[in-house]
Amino acid sequence: MVNAFEVSICIPTCNRPDLLDLAIRSCLAQTYPHIHVLIGDDSTDDRTQRWMQTHYALERRVHYLRNERSLGQGANVSRLFERAHGDKIVLLHDDDLLEPDGVRTLLELWDRVPDLEVAFGDQYLIDMQGRIDYAASARCNSDFLRTASAEGLQAVPGRTGLVSMFPNNGWLANADIVKQVGYQSQYGAGCDYVFGVELCLKAKKIYYVKRYVSSYRRTPGASSVVNRGSLRSSALEALRLVSSLDLSHHLEPARRIAYKRMVPVAVSTLSRNNEPVTGLRLAMRHLHAYHYGLSRRFYYHMMLIGTSWFRRRRKTPRF
Image (cartoon, rainbow, N blue to C red; front, side, top):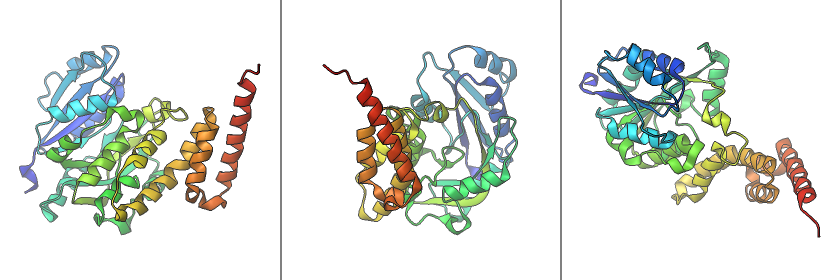
């Protein structure tokens, strides 16, 4: 049954032809044969276009399109989803990789659960040279609640997205549900998380398999790294979404877990960007994120808030 599906692997890219090439190679090396690769190029120069013309012009499984104008990550991914004509969709960022049996591993879950909608597995952490950090990979998957005890159909699908268990890429899903959800470009650096939350809230059947299916590269130029510490950070954007959601009562515990992960990062970011009052209100509203003041992180953040407040006072002109 698995061989009945055509899989569209969508790769958004921007100014990284060397890493994109590695990502494409990992797709073409899949043990599952019925795949095609869609590339949306948001680059500001023509290096990627020239690389694709030189190396992949004759590869029928690779379909390249350079955007006429820069769309930004969210809109670029959305356009890729619109172009996808496969039964299933995989998202892979241009600096990441698929394991050779990644697509087949996830597709085989549809043999177990024919009406499955979404599937995902574990991610390796790799450096710029592609070397796997096995210990850090295990810790990372555990930190995001991808553990052996969680394997299988997810009892509360929406929870999977809210608590950040769902990965930013390397997942596989039915094309129709992916296209319905789309990517929300207004969330900037937080669009990966926002998509995961909305997809999991919409899906009825999501399966997590305790196997490595992709690799996440720790890239200095990644948008999550570039925007970290700014008021456009992924943590603040994700917090904005989570705070706005109208959730059923059985998903409120998941929202609290999300707050516990996001709030301390957001408070620190606000304090470092001269928004101490907003940071203080956020911390006081979500004291559970700091174990109700029993965390050393709480007092460190209070110090940051105080420092930020005095810094603002000193800059305020007096008449």
